[in-house]
Each structure stands twice: as C-alpha cells, then as structure tokens.
Image (tube, rainbow, N blue to C red):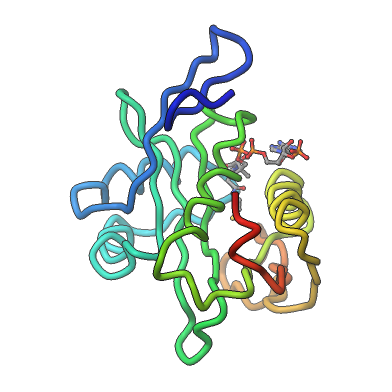
Length: 182
Ligand SMILES: CC(C)(COP(=O)(O)OP(=O)(O)OC[C@H]1O[C@@H](n2cnc3c(N)ncnc32)[C@H](O)[C@@H]1OP(=O)(O)O)[C@@H](O)C(=O)NCCC(=O)NCCS
C-alpha cells in the first residue's frame, strides 16, 4: 500500500516507511554492509561502493527508513551504449523483502531525467536466483516489454570463485517506453 511517498505493507505490523534517493558519499559503508546481508550477491570492497556513490550516483538509487539504508540498485550506462541501463546489483535487506521495494527502486531509477535515452535494461542473473529472475520478469511485464536471455559470463570465467559461482547469463529487457514507467 502506498501512503504519500512511502510504502507500507498490507499488514500494519509490516509498515515500512521508505525514502528513495541517489546515494551519497557517506552511504559507502552502509551499502557494503547491506550487500553483506544479501547473498548470493558478490560482496565488493567498501572502496568500490564509495566509487559508486562518487561517480555513479545518478544511475544508482538507495532506499532508507529511519533505521538506515535497506535497499540499493547499482547501475551504470555502459560506454557508447547510452540506450542501455546495466543493472549491476539489486539488494533489499531481508527485513524489507516481499513488499515491492526492489521493483519500486528499479521503476524510480528509470523515471530519472538522466535515464531518458534508455530503452533497454540489461542485467545478469544466475539460473538459481529465482527472486531476482522474478523481479526482472515483473519489471518487463509492468513495462509491457519482453525479456530475452542469452549467454554472457560462464561459471569458469569467475576464476578462483568458479566453484561457488553460477554462470551469469544476460537478461535484456525492452524496448522500453518511459511513458510506461509508473
Ligand atoms: C531479489 C531481491 C532484490 C527482491 O527484492 P524484493 O523487494 O523482495 O522484491 P519485490 O517485493 O519487489 O518483488 C518483485 C517480484 O519478485 C518476486 N519475488 C521476490 N522475492 C522472491 C522470492 N524469494 N522467490 C520468488 N519470487 C520472489 C515477487 O513475488 C514479485 O513478483 P510478483 O509481483 O509477480 O509476485 C531481494 O530478494 C534480494 O535482495 N535478494 C538478495 C540479493 C539478490 O539476489 N539480488 C538480485 C541480484 S542482482
């Protein structure tokens, strides 16, 4: 249920007031900590999350409530392909899952002025990550777009991590019409 700019769960006990905004420098450690709570995402260094806040804040989004950061989408415009938004990591803290926050962050990101040329969303998702696959399938559905899957990063490419890492096929969603973003 939406109340003003906030999301609330249908169960009053699950009330979840959330603010969405671009990340800022001070969020770096909190983003690192959030991803640490979100397997199977790869946890990167705090420095990497600081770079995201410093150089990619216009293509990333965070969700926070009064207890702190509880969601993030990191994304970027691949060089020379400015009609593509590549979504790198989507993380929703376990206490906030199943309330539509992942989908809401993706839609809010697509609404931004800087996203205007974007007609495609690309991401990679392992075959076993049903939550993430469902999330992107739902985004495609809501946008009236199709989702196409193709091979990209096979498991062996993950080097020393290969034994514990699934392949990461590419999901490509589009073509998008921004007027369809609600
Ligand atoms: C994937 C993730 C971001 C989803 O966030 P969320 O806010 O709980 O997702 P939403 O509530 O917006 O749900 C969006 C859709 O995904 C579905 N979904 C969410 N979690 C699911 C799960 N565990 N299993 C199956 N479907 C799931 C929802 O039912 C909804 O689809 P529907 O509208 O058809 O019912 C969250 O589970 C997460 O952070 N997981 C760990 C990190 C990860 O795997 N990130 C994605 C890789 S980039």
